[in-house]
Length: 452
Image 1 (cartoon, rainbow, N blue to C red):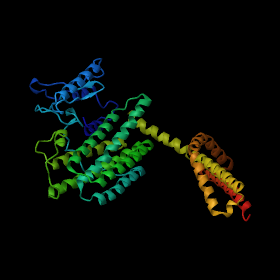
Image 2 (tube, rainbow, N blue to C red):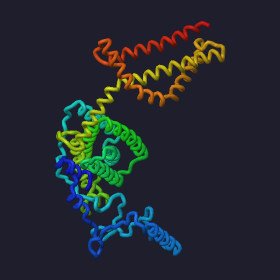
Image 3 (spheres, helix red, strand yellow):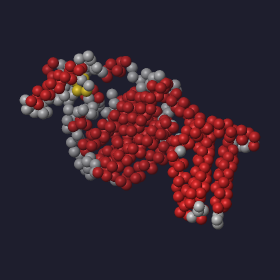
Image 4 (cartoon, rainbow, N blue to C red):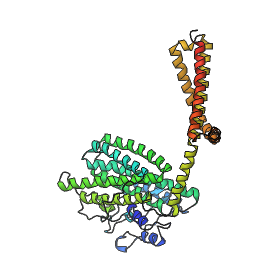
């Protein structure tokens, strides 16, 4: 079962039990033929007491083959901690299964009848920001890749495989922390990531990326992973909306790819063997068939992510609780936001002023010269102050986090006593006062030595 099929199930049944016992049973039916003996189950001895003996036997067999001087590829030891797979995977036609990146029971037939024109109109401010963000990313991509759709697809799939993994990982950790079911979302998101990865494995057979395109992939993936991770922590709804619009752009890109294939601008070469096996395509399938099924997968991912962002207004279950609690967490952070910023600013002001005063007085005492009359010395003091402040950064962050609740109460007290419209005015008043005191201290110190 791949991400597209899991997504379809989620769209049809938005409940807490999306993967029933019947579904699991159906998915676990043996799909491998065992030559002339019928169906052969692939059994792996997991952590058995005889694993050490199995490992020893495997090593002895390899050593024997080496001594006999036979073909080095004749004996393949597929072992991990003494657990080895003795039965080879075979296809329906009896040939050995050659892929290690996916297994026969993970293959499927893509649903190409899905509506490719469906578009979620941005309604809320968050939707509009997500839509604008994706549209702004399309412009530089068009300039860089232009009509080189093979390399464009490679870049697209490198990025598209990130959200499912990030979302699945965070939901997985949340489920562990809260001791609660995920409603099937963890599996659906991880399968989406796996499906996108297989898209990448396929297009690597079609497009041969240049060195700078590989470098770009590394850079973009690193930036996008961290950006999406942070956005998912702040707002899963926004993160899934972004992915929904990314998938819409992917559908558009693959549609343009198909147009160039049909027009003969791109050669319609035979489909890679990995794509034929993964999507169960006919043996004479072409690149056009591959792009068609990949586009269908992207359409399924589009629907799943727009649905996850709350398009259908589903109620109850794991996902709704995640949304509600995320909103509450953002509200708490926003409430303490001014206090946290002010607390960190206070620590900054105190440490910067203290380091400046100590460095200023220390220079004058050690050299007998006035640092205010020596620009080079004054710059050295500023650099020393900046260095010392960076050394204490971790302590200031910890102190600010501890002090934030106290600062929050203080801001409320100032607001009430001075009858201010909001805490923002109290915040501005405190910042102005602290800044005035710090600048006054530094100014008096410099002026006291000026001209001496």
